[in-house]
Image (cartoon, rainbow, N blue to C red; front, side):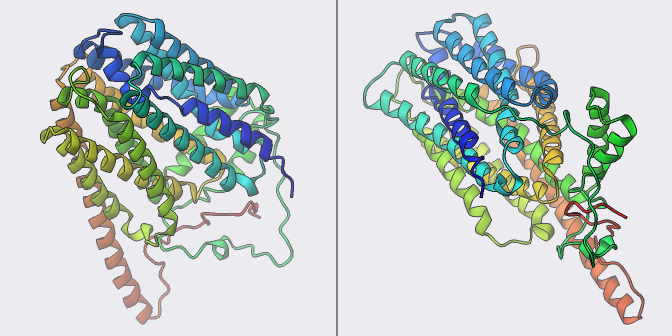
Length: 487
């Protein structure tokens, strides 16, 4: 078996580890509000932090197209450079304007993250996708956990100033900057630089009827073969296959319409977008809440331990999903409802109890639960999509989450809006997740009731000797075509 996947995977893992090795991250708010930067809570929460959300939203779609057009590697170099600029400003910059510029460059680094997670699929064979994905994601989580733990130990045990943690983070970013230069540049991409595909011949004895290829799934709600590439082939034949921008945009639109016409995929995508919006808000402003409850100027804080535990527990929960046998097709919406309630209660406790240990514990529960559910959602979405369409759905879901987060930030956080104190903010975030739970409770009850009625009607029809499609099984085409062209 070819080992061509090993070299780029090792380099990408080294890059991901050092990019996420940030000892200063759990103490960012304390550092900004401390003697080194001497910023007020209002300046940090209401004027500086919102800039990350805005820049991430503005840059996401252009970076998505640029990543594919430039074949990933230049965008990875840009991301590494953005991290260096971010932490260089954090070390030397002073004042609100400098910190706002920092947030912009951090938005660039975050928006270009798509290059990290999609690069590997362009240089390795599909047979190695699962292996290299596991390596890359595990290493980024490990880097984050090691960085948080290192930062906490340096602060608590060695009494290292927070400025030194920022310098260590900058040094880690400089080390990460070296790795992308040695990565092989891909010769293909997901949308641009494609050649027209040649339809494959069906093997002798292979079934022509698409219905015979349908997996024995419990809930066949998709009306399109989301794993097929026929739409791309047709568009390329029609428009010449030169990989131009307009052609790519037409392919994206056709894929978008097909993907989101699948009801099951739509449900998981809705949860993804809604919850990721709330998750970003809580993660962004949790340190400000902790600082309000237990000021770092007066007490010893343990943010690094909390980030380490929540990262590792979330990774463990995500890993354990693969061993849980649940009919997500039937109970998915109700499960999302129940876990959304858990998240809402955790955020509510963070806001109302105002005890730092309750706040820390609730944060760990919140983050681990989200990582568990986002793993399930990722699997449920990716199971019926090829890699190109998965990149599209991932981008669209993230874009919608950022649009919602921007609206929430403008109204609740920004000084141009209500500029609420941190405690009312978290009350709103808890209520937001409670509203998500209600949405999926209604969707779950409706789905279960619909399936029950349909199953009853099917039994009656079968007893009368008439053939009737099962509930949700109204797909004229299979979800997975296994690359077989339709005759």
